[in-house]
Amino acid sequence: MTETNIEASGGPTGSAGSSETTRPAQRRNLFAGRTLSDGKKLFWWREILIVVVVDIVYETVRNLSAGKPDKAYENALRIIDWQRTLGIWHEQAMQNFALDFTALIVFANYFYGSVYMGATIFTLIFLYRKFPDDYSLFRNTLMIGTLCGLIGFALFPLMPPRLLDDTLLLHGANAGNWFGFVDTLVEFPTFWSFNDEAMKTISNQFAAMPSLHCGWAFWGLIALLPRMKSWWSKTLVILYPIMTVYVVVITANHYVLDAVAGFALFTFAYYAARAITRAGRGAPVTTAN
Image (tube, rainbow, N blue to C red):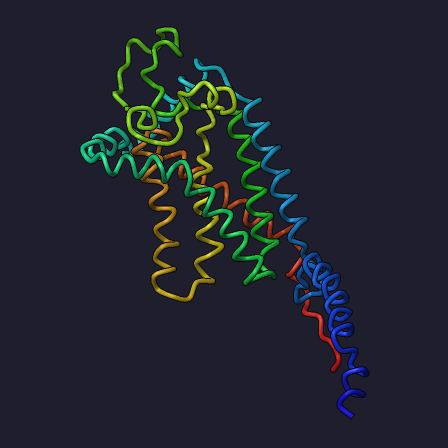
């Protein structure tokens, strides 16, 4: 009886056959995607492709739309006048205070160069895995806000504070003004700098208005805050855009109004995404038992 049962179950041969049949099924499941409550589906490989394509378009168009230094400088003086009128021209005082603490500046350099990327990728993965019904809305918000930022770069090229005293770049046109900002990415340790020749060729240094660093941080706030459960995770999410604004100012990469414009842009992007996003927002599909 025992031998009969072994033969019927296939013994070692049957186990191997079962393993062979499950492997293709596992491979198929890897690409099966996620079914949303309204019956639509998300595919992780397609989402990666969308993000890569949007990033390539963004990087290419941003660098092609680089404005001329003299125009970017004129716009910078205009921003400074606006902020003085509004009583919010504090960039010099904020950086001067931070320069007394080398560790703070080094931290700000690394924060500026890396956190926005890691936080954005984390948010997309978190939403895809934990809140797939909300993923499409915030993916579309991110794309609309990022691509619309290109309009600002093209129409309003803006010289960041760190370049205001660069007489070589401006051929001496700024000789009558001296602001005293320090390019912290050059003067303090970091893993990259806009001063590198490679960075100069691939980065539009006058793409300061709006600040997408701040816009992306605001996007992370509205995407994550309602979905976080612990007090410490909510605290981190709230601190993220606050720290981003502080970092872009003390590193002399942006003005305060750049951050305000970034927040406003992604507020618009969110409502625009709500108007066009369908996936995950339809009536739930019910299945009979």
